Length: 154
Image (cartoon, rainbow, N blue to C red; front, side, top):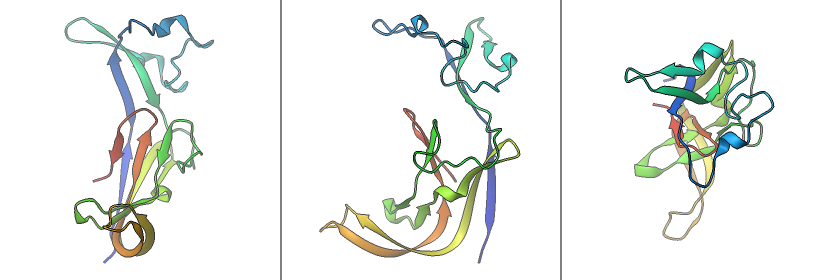
């Protein structure tokens, strides 16, 4: 039984401007005056919003995913990393595969596949840690932003 799913995700993070006592980052502006985590292709109209309470929130991170064929394998991208790891937590039987995460037509594609895959990996959680070979039943993705939490497929 093989079933393929594609997930298209647009990502943007709006955060209220905050200041740190010992790190006032406004003193270190980029030459373009665009935040270091804001994609230069993000429209100006999307870089700032006003809340229902009248506060102004500035965009601090965005990625337009406009470049087709972008690779998210470790070390290939400045912002994201797709991991190649099995997930054995809670008796899970899936493997995260970085080739299932890519860009196409200005979209981030996250592909999930069902079907057996035999994989050998180091399992540090065994009573005696070592390599083991298991059959995983699905290939998913895990995409991490540097200095942020992982985003898992469902």
